Image (cartoon, rainbow, N blue to C red; front, side, top):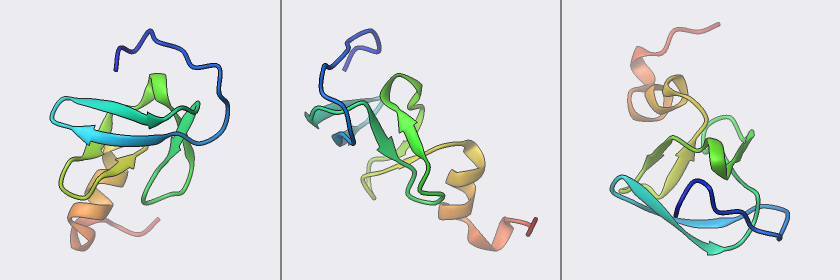
Length: 74
């Protein structure tokens, strides 16, 4: 998906995560972070797992999912 593409559909998108890119399966304006549950606008989506097919809102969310023993509380 090109980051400049826009969809007229609102709501949560269904996305297939690929290496270095992603493909929108069902149009929408955002996906949810697998760790925090917060909505991530598609044009701001930077972090995801191809193996788990999950999106993450931040590098800290990736760390929390991949290495929960390394995340400090608070």
